[in-house]
Length: 324
Image (cartoon, rainbow, N blue to C red; front, side, top):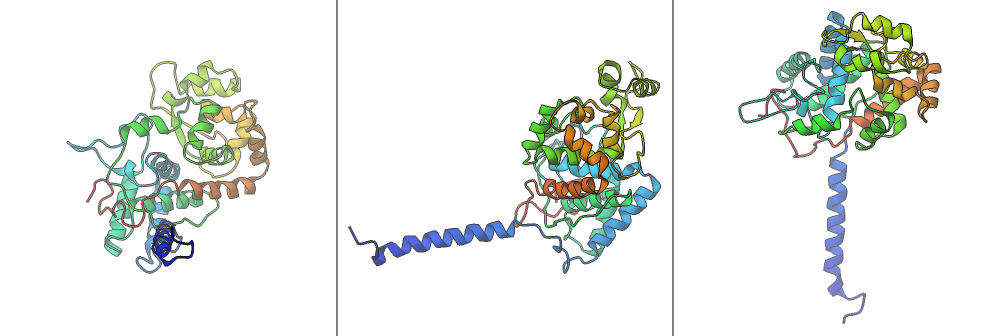
């Protein structure tokens, strides 16, 4: 048996060092960067921002829809734009999943953005990055704070209808189910509460809150009655009501204030303030807007980093609705 300092042991050491270096290099290449397009497409961020602002100017609800589009993408296969893929004769995407069908919208705005980017910088900016930036710009357009969006994601060539049906938290979820759904994606309960604050903008369909306004007891009675006028016990499934009854088109902390008054629209909303350990977080956000906005931005950055495709994985789709 050769001594430990024998040269015969060097090749294995070199192999280990090579493998370690390769691993570290691979890890580094997987890191996203807010300056990713600085040289390859310097106009990317301004193009996206202008298109988002134009869409929100036409319809303020679109800001909430674009924000939700990013969320529904990241929770299924990671932030890879899989949600944007259309069904074909041989491919089933995520658009017809229960949480998405007749509900998720904004695809046409993404198409417009992608078309403009392809004219300016062909084959450079991914659809997944468009979703991440558009979500941030939508929040800003409705009065929220900005954050630096890490970029460099690539687009998937696959989608998962089954994962879309199971991984996205339902509006009927209990607090423990919500915490578990976010934990499955590496997000903490605190980050879950912060991200739920996105419901300070946007609207929901009657079918998602009907059970709450007729069956839940932890709801303001006059609030429930007012909602029942627009959401009958049968029919009217697609009738809309604002998630934030106070200021539905302003990105503020009214959502949390509403929860204190038992005016959460969805069952899952009110679960955040229903005698559980997230009550204190809701109270804190209801009284400190800046804390909420800061935590929301940080949570969005973390959510946007769920299993991105980088390096040579995936592709840069020319058309966000189909693989190249």
